Length: 335
Image (cartoon, rainbow, N blue to C red; front, top):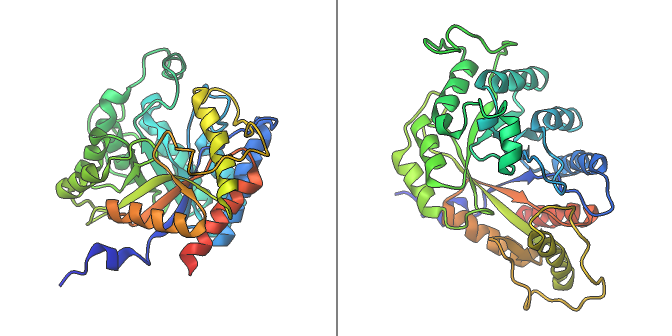
């Protein structure tokens, strides 16, 4: 008899990181990138399973515009943790170029590289237009075809027709990167099911994805790489020892959101603020609180999605607070 999901998974949920490389107020983008490398090394020692970096363009508060370059630097400065993209925004690029970028990473760091692919632009419309060779890119309307082409190239199989007919993705490697599809909508999840690929659901964008993930499982078509569906969930989290500290972290994040995510991450308005979690309410789906509370909330999210893995997204002004948040979460799951 199959055990209930809660009993099977409650102690075996993997913890991973999705890093959007936030730029705090008063900190240079160069230092923000170095902070990402520092955080990756830190969570590697804590035992996190994978470390993904995001792709954003035209946003002064997020410095990660080239995940492939950052992945290489992070992999060089860590030891065990898997490193990848969360994700490369495929609508901007040639499938061949994306495949070759990750073949290089896989050659340099065998069996540690993940290729997470996303459908969204990760930018405003004007910047997206400029990225797409001034409007001549494949675009999100052929996302399924691009995903299939990338997987075919990584498998060293032959593409029979079109511009990629007979083309190889070089350099050749003994193993291929682990391919994931990111989703915050039913359309992207259906592509993952159709292709038999793991799905990473962005709960921090769309907190109502459990039914879509169930549909993904229902329609999953087994592939060479995966005989069963695999689901991870990206969750926005702020964790600290006291509710007062968490409230200040949340206040800073909400100020940034209220400003339209345009500038650097601000400090909280008043360091002596008496703000509390009882009066502050996150404007987007997220988990906030002290360690025990965050642990309970994260298990609830994992159970709701029947997820094998949680990708923790933490954005706040202070880099040390950010590191401590990941540390406190890891300690709770180690108990």
